Length: 402
Ligand SMILES: C[S@@+](CC[C@H](N)C(=O)[O-])C[C@H]1O[C@@H](n2cnc3c(N)ncnc32)[C@H](O)[C@@H]1O
Image 1 (cartoon, helix red, strand yellow):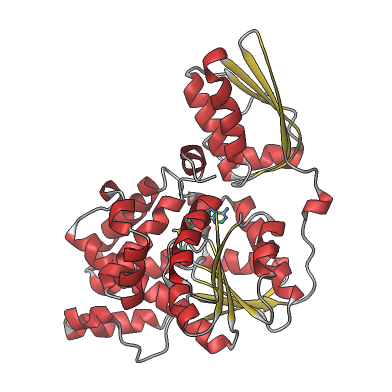
Image 2 (cartoon, rainbow, N blue to C red):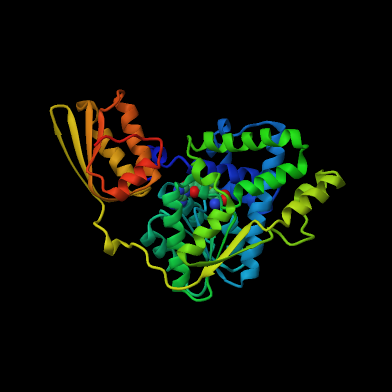
């Protein structure tokens, strides 16, 4: 599955390499070791990094705080199992498996398959990676069930790549998992991600320079993920996110990122005034923690038509019928189906009448097919139900025709 098509369909995974790079630059020992294990020096495209002095200073600080705040919560939670959803290339697994925790990192198959190789080399019990799509409940449940006992579910740096509809589906899935295993808990920096960036920037730069730095940060991630940031989700006020969690059935509490008195590695390189300002920013209540308020129901594979594609070619036209979920796991199949007929066709009709869900990865495939066909209206999407039509509409990278 880790082929060029799967990588193109799910470009957000590239940004995960940036996080490891910043943590390595921050000097975290496990990040330095992990970067070597995953060959980050060869894997990371230098074009993704905005190599300005400011970015190479700010990012290690931001990521040391973000990564460290989640780690500190896991330790406090008392759970000895961790499900790290959209784990990317985070060194968290290495850190916690060495401490005797059972860590399962769940990310898209392109990432998980690569990391499974690393794990084989390490022979470290309690460190596992599995392919999953956070919008797909069954894939998360399979990862969750690899552990016994209460689980601390972690999400770091995923939210801004999801559409509003996907974000709600992911949160529902997490709440459902929490409700299934007593004592389990949830921690994320996601709804406060932009706020965290902002808090760090405003504590280190004069007011007339903060917006520019903030903009540069977002642009860098947007570029690295091939335009993957969903501004609708990235810019949503934190209160709206909290409200959404509560509506779904999670009990949430915003707690300080790090306890007062926590020392960052970056402190050694900063003047006392900056250390004081940053220490204050680090104690802002931007860490969202949660547990299930009750039983939550979600759509599972049992409730849905299984994913399948049927295709036929007539007179230069490729007709594809997509059944089931078109998510990060299945979208590469659609792209493969198109590419295998590419030389014989110049029009595509995709029938979505039996499609139950279209994620941003599905939308990206529509966009890529349309781009490859070259002219408007050479890709026709038809038959989408109200809900699927809405999922496609909210994803502004594509335009559909009925
Ligand atoms: C910015 S990275 C964050 C990685 C890691 N949590 C960290 O903080 O270093 C975003 C990650 O989300 C993953 N991702 C994107 N969409 C996903 C989905 N639908 N399901 C699971 N993982 C997803 C990407 O593959 C990528 O590894």
